[in-house]
Length: 506
Ligand code: FES
Image (cartoon, rainbow, N blue to C red; front, side, top):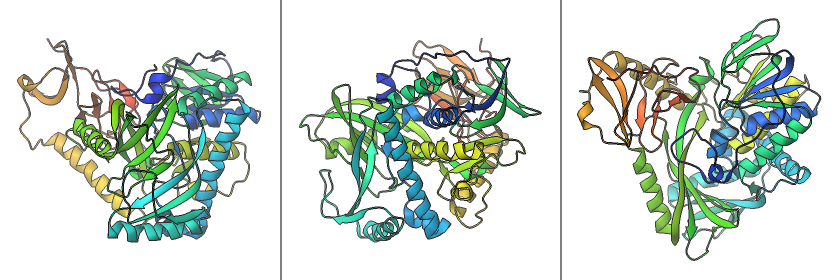
């Protein structure tokens, strides 16, 4: 089992061993490229660049697979969370075609690495099914099907889906796949080190200064490089991208079935929020993996209830023997529907970023690696403009952008002028956290199972919003840009770079 950024553990993280690095980081040398983040984006980017002759260092705050890559459901799809009719509206037919082409190329690259390094990660090609259960969904599915076909996918209408339910209308898209993400990332990391790359784990990047060379300050000391990449899911610090990416949490259960009737392909309903279904064999055991109940980070009071609703949905559809795993994970929804990959806005130096992957982190992480490799090597790519983080889309994404920023204002205001009576310390049960009024100040207070109190300042160190308690993951989550903290205030997720200040409790 490996460490993760939450209280729950994912199927993948439970089956992964810790990654032992091979090469030692050298503070005396100037690396060609330093990459922050040891998930699929960081490791794939590092491998591709090292393979192209660049000397790379990956700096990971915890361990490989600690964050988003360890919490994914690992659908490898060109049929994306943001449908092609939306992408077409925002980026035109050619943009939609390029997105389909780029994601298909990413799946091919993953398969190529699996074959080349003989990676045992249960990779299988699959079809994807999207299905409508109401007239309204059926009308929306018609538009999605047309745009998906126009983008170049192999789409067909079907009568049945591989799930025990009826559908009014359904489509099938071929050329998708599934795998276990952590064996893939860890083996690719080893391949990267075998060709001279270096990985530094348990080391958080705390500052990046663009000087003659780029100075990267980490918790294990300073390093120098010529080019730098944030592959940290969302970049830390304060950036335009934090206004363009909205953080969400999604809930997942992995179950064994009593009747062995596992759905082998990938399926998606069209509810709001939608459910996603697939099966994966892990160490000889087949698991049904179902996700859903998504909500904006820090906006759900009772996160345990999200698991309960998801479990009820799974039990209603399937003959469940046992729910073996349940975990939640974070993703960032880009304002106009596709990721931001390229130069970090507001920076003059060679500082790059990849973020805003929606729920398609495995494919978009790999798309990012392919594009970043070309960008950093100074090569042409047809995708540079499409994914440019500085692109301006004043109309596209307007609905997402405004409420989210309005929320930022509300959160800041509520810190200064609390509207609700604060809960009292006496109401706290073991294993529970709350914002309480303690000696005239607001305190984020957690009582552990032994009755010990952990108290931190609830003001997010990113831009000052007030954090909210996440009961299911036992973390303090910021509703503004998705930073998350442990009960002792340590950073679990960027964009915060600094932990919450601890309070002394006597
Ligand atoms: Fe931006 Fe908390 S994540 S204010």
